Amino acid sequence: MLGYECFKATDDRKLDTDACVKVVLRNKNLGLDQYRFLLKTIVSSGLGEETYGPRNVIDGREEFPSENDAHAEMDEIMFSTLDTLFEKTRVSPTEIDILVVDVSLFSPAPSLTSRIINRYKMRDNIKSFSLSGMGCSASMIAIDMVQQLFKTYKNQFAIVVSTESIARHWYCGKEKPMMLSNCLFRNGGCSILLTNKRNLRDRCLLKLECTVRTNIGYDNEAYGCCIQVEDPQGYQGFLLTKNLTKAAAKAFTGNLKLLLPKILPVWELLRYAISTLRKKSTKGQNLSSNLNLKSGVDHFCLHPGGRAVIDGLGKSLGLSEYDLEPTRMALYRFGNTSAGGLWYVLSYMEAKKRLKKGDKILMVCLGAGFMCNNCVWEVMKDGLEDTRVWEDCIDEYPKRDVVNPFTEKCSWINDECMNFVRIDGRMFY
Image 1 (cartoon, rainbow, N blue to C red):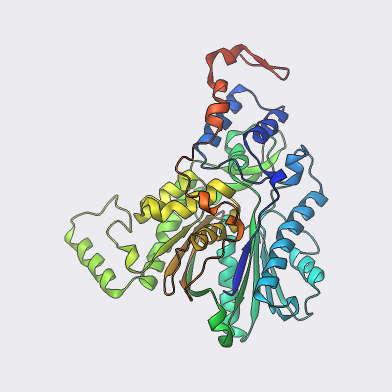
Image 2 (cartoon, rainbow, N blue to C red):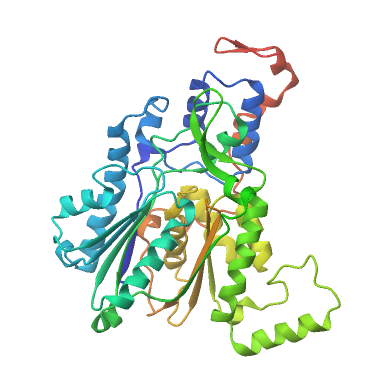
């Protein structure tokens, strides 16, 4: 990896408490029960006051988004990150040999890759790929695709653009399992420059050690636990069911069984095997409960999917709060930016000067399908300290108090007297 750049929107796009309340109250389909559910969900989400929403949602046009809204959203994220990436790495767009764009919920014609090629006037023999429907784990799939292409094509430059379309997919109905996405997903994305040119080794930030992809779509519960559907009223949205936790655990465990032998030293694997054989029963234990993951990994870059996701992954891997800090802070500051989320976590680690030459970074991501896609990077140089999107706030982190302001500002919604109050023309009983 020669470089990467994350997207950061302007301050007028921030979804603070007041902005969120305005969005919620605009939805005429909601009643008191839904308000209380949203309050509980937002308070426990792990998101702070400075995440960014789509322009059309901020402007009050979430119920009837246009094609232009979606294109404007993608253009801003893709072009701003690519402009900065080309400038910092001093690599020209005409030098790019491979281009991969992953956006799950927006697949226009011409494709987003063609839109980038047109903007930067790239070569006519560029190998371009557009990935859709891969969910939050799409970025690792794109990285793995580039790795496979590098085995065939030598001396190449590759660009991966990872983001998600939120503008056209803000849920405006009243089904609780579909309202969760509005509480978690925010605008964000990242562009990454990769190469297999050996003469550029000294300029690289990270080296990809291995990737492992797991897809348990054969399991009906797992397949349907995170899926785009239409509710009974005709509103499209993303359905997140109670089976998601179970599916995530199954996919994650299967992935670790393949990944850990690749990254842990032989002596640690032998120690674990002997320890396991000595026990009469290991039922109910996590795969990594007796493994010292830090014998092969120095940093853990987890998907910032929500507080529950982070807690679950942290417990499974036996991680400390120090290990989880980058993921928690990325979620708090930027929200769940889907496929782009991992790179905000990595950027936090770099801004905090945690990364040293030779360190190994484990990236863990989960996504619709249901999939778990992980990879391991090696830090190639000392002195990585670019603050990127954290430049104006890194000294304020970590936040010790991450209580969402909704707790204080909107707790009145749980008062018993609200059962008999009229709000915006709607009477609650």
